[in-house]
Amino acid sequence: MSLYFPKAFNKLLPVLSLWAVMGCSTSKPASAIESAPAAVTPAVPTPPPYGPAEIKRQVLASEALKNRFVGFALYDPELKQMVVEHNADKYFVPASNTKLFTFYASLKMLGDSIPALKYVVRGDSLIFWGTGDPTFTHMDVKNSLAYDFLKNRKEKLYYLEAPFESEPFAPNWSWDDYNYYYQPERSVFPIHGNVVKFVKKAGVASYSVTPKRFKASTKTDTARNVNKDEFVRAWRSNDFQYFPRHAPASFSVEVPFIPSPDMTVKLLADTLKRSVTLLKQRALPKGGQTFYGLPADTVLKRMMQVSDNLFAEQLMALCSGTLSDTLSVERGIQHATKTYLADLPDAPIWVDGSGLSVKNMFTPRSIIALLKKLQQERPTERLLTLMATGGQPGTFKSIYQAAVPFVFGKSGTLSHVHNQSGYIKTKSGKLLLFSFMNNNYSATSIEIRNEMVRIMTEVHEKY
Image 1 (tube, rainbow, N blue to C red):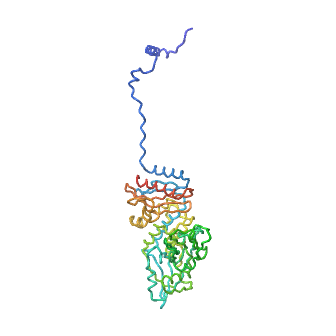
Image 2: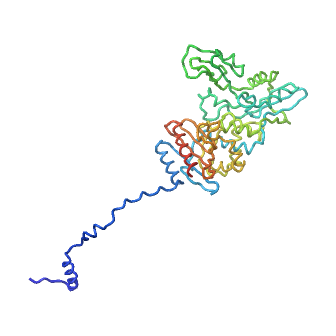
Image 3: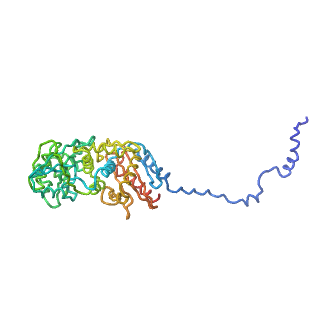
C-alpha cells in the first residue's frame, strides 16, 4: 500500500534527513554542559526606605495585634499635606486631648493675664466676686497676687457669689471618682484647688490637714476594711474618714471637698486671717473692676504639662466671663466652637474643658487642623514650651526620653482610651504634626502607650 504525503511535507524531507544524520537528538553536547555557568541565587530585594507606607504598615499591624480601634494622622506642614492617614475621619473619645481645644480657646479669648477676681468699692466696703480663676491659694502653684490684694485692703471685705450656670460635674463624669484628686468640683471661686491635702511623714504618728478647717470633720476608722483608699469623703458632705490600715508610712493624698458660698467665705477668712462677710444679693454690682493675677501662659502650661483637670474646666469658665457676667463652661465652649473652630474638617463634639467626659468626640484630622491653628497663634518654639515634653516633668516624663526632647503635645487616658497628639521633631530636621488615638482596647494602657512610643520614636529616628 502506498502512503500519501501532502506536497508541503515533501519540502521538509531534506531537513528531516539532515536531522536524522546528526543523531536525532536535541541535547547539548557534554562539552557545552560542562562549560555552563553555575546557578546564581536570586538577590534579596533591598527593603524600601522608611516612609509613609512603612509607618502605615506598622500602625495597621499594631491595630490588629492589640485588637483596638486606631486613628492616626501624620502631617507635614512644609509640604502642607498628610503623610499618613488611617481612620483620620472617624470620631474617637479624646480624653485629655480635649485640653488642646481648651488651650486654643484660652489663647483666643483670654489676654496675657488671668482675671483673678472682680470688685467694686462702696465707701468703707470692698465687694468682690470670682471669675473662675483656679489659682487662688493653690497648693502647687505659687501665686499670692489676689491673696495679697485682699489681705492688704483697708476696706471691709464682702464676698458675692457670681452666677454660675455649670454643674459641679460635667455630663458623663464618673460619679464614683468624686473622691479622687483628678476630679474636683467646678466653682466660681476655687480655693486651695478645691481639694483637702492630707500629708504624713515617715516616723511621725499624726498627719497634717490643709485647709485646717477640715481636720475637725475627719474621723479615724481602725475597725473596718472596706476599701483601698486612705481617705474617703462622704458622697455629698465634707465629712472624711481615715483608714490607717490602708495608709503607708508616709503619704500625700488630695481629696476634693464640696465648694459652696458659705464654705468659700469660711476658707477665705481662715486663710486671709480677717473677717469676710457673705452677701446674699443676686445681682452683681455695676462698674466692677478686674484684678489680674498670673500670666495666662503659667496657667496654660500647668494645664497642659500635668493635665490639671480643674485648670481646664476653670479656664473655659474664665473664657465665658469675657462674654457675660454669668459664668458657664458650656457657653465658653459653644462660643469657641462657633467662632474659631467652624472650619475644622469634622465638627467637634465638645462638652467639657478637661476631657473627663466620654461624650467628647474628635477626629484625628480635626486635631491636626487644631494643631496647625495653634502654630498660627504662637511662635513654634514658644508654643512647644507650654506642651507636655518627652522626658520632662509632666505626663511625658517617663516616655520619649532623650538628651534633646523631640515630642511635644498632650496625652489622654480614660478606661479603654489612650491618645497622644502634638508635634514631633525628626532627626532629618522636620517638624511633623501627629494625632495617634486608641479606643476600645482590652489591653492595659501601658501596653498601648509603649506601642505608640515605639512607632513614634521610629518616625523621629528614620523619617
